[in-house]
Amino acid sequence: MPGFVRNPTGLRDHPALVLNADYRPLSYLPLSLWPWQEAIKAAFLDRVIVLAEYDEVVRSPSLVVALPSVVVLKEYVRPAKTAAFTRFNLFLRDEFTCQYCGARDGLTFDHVLPRSRGGRTTWSNVVAACGPCNLRKGSKTLKQAGMHLRRPPVRPSPEHLQNIGRKFPPNHLHRSWMDYLYWDAELEA
Image 1 (cartoon, rainbow, N blue to C red):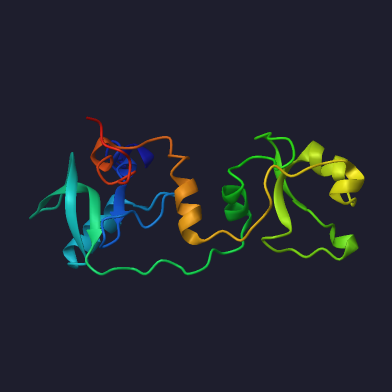
Image 2: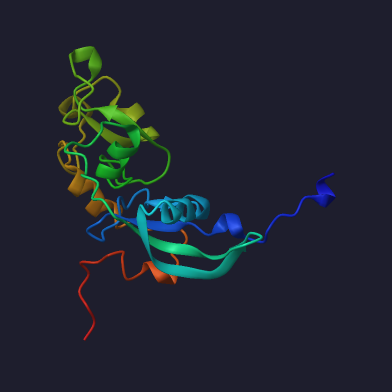
């Protein structure tokens, strides 16, 4: 039976960049992308404006539709007022870097003031740490371990996380997206 199933070449690989009504991406990391099916559905429901299209099309018996590559929402979606305290956002705040030695591999998180000493799991007490630094520090204070933080842990704003996210583009950026990403970058003369 699998020999009779047609797999359209690459159609699953054509995501649409989703922009808010102010023409900014809903998020940078992860980049706000929809599968092409969702983008076409939203266009037919008149919820988005298609700004750019791929060269690929999909066909039905009565329609031929170009796959959207950039869509903008017709209604503005308010950004979150506070950043969720998640492992991913913590690593993003710390730029995927150990806050003790600067390593980028094998990250976990560490309580600056250990929980065994009354430390809480909050933005201001948890940092990204590599395994070796986390083991070295253990349940000691920074002073006892002879370690220092690269920067103090603080609660990030959603805007701060968005700005950091711009430093980590996904592996693939379609050329039609470039005019809408990094919109505040300095123009070349």
